[in-house]
Length: 329
Ligand SMILES: [Mn+2]
Image (cartoon, rainbow, N blue to C red; front, side, top):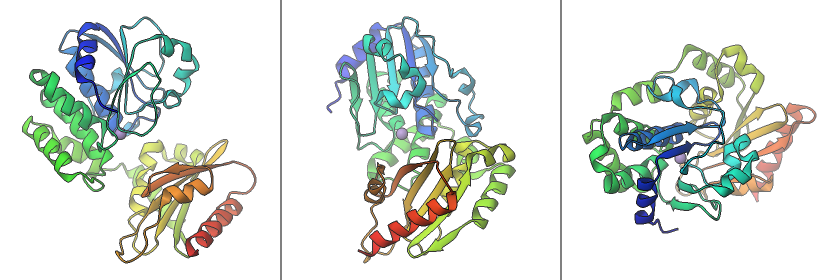
């Protein structure tokens, strides 16, 4: 999809009252994109409200403007509605129940995920970008350069860091590093992001990691682990904080596939990661494995889910056995 920057610029210029939307369980890129774009637009005298269907994780509590994100939408009149870091209505969860409202409004989509935005939306999409923050920053350098400042740069830097796993997963090195450099030159607070997002973890996060580590099992090519959503309450951590477990576990040497099972109320969610670092070995495609169970994703990371029926251990054993079999083929 070729971005139409002139049209986009005009649309932003002529809109006074703007609603910015992020996706459900907003991640660092979603939040960085929202807050960065918000500040750029606010500097131009726009009235901006911003919404995500679920509360941002405690992990982002250190960001000064995070509390302004609302989790209920008023369906009032806005000149423009902007979706960042997602393209389809299902990513705004409950807000999309009133689909007619969004169908009737002018929508801009800024995103790097595959998937088709609503037909009437003006889409500024680039699926080769590592993050949406990167797309908005590149756009801002063209359209709103004079408004860029340290805070905005820090928000975009947050998006670059989180979606790239702190520059681990980037493919287009030149693009992400030149954007990171440009942001650092704008005094993006790299230390703030590193300390709060990469380095420091709460004691409860580490305690929970301990639980997960004790549950690790290895069968064939697969290392797997599980937790139940209700356990998070006991440790006073949220989903995003618990995610750290998978970040650590996926780096364990040896197994070619890492699976985290998560028992929710109605579903068992399953996150798959590859750990294929041996060059002569045929890499595992997580997407293909997830597809066997009706899920999907990327070659390196994918997900699928199962209805929460019967015994969790039985389900895990049967899924692991089935995948091991398919890996041998
Ligand atoms: Mn993203």
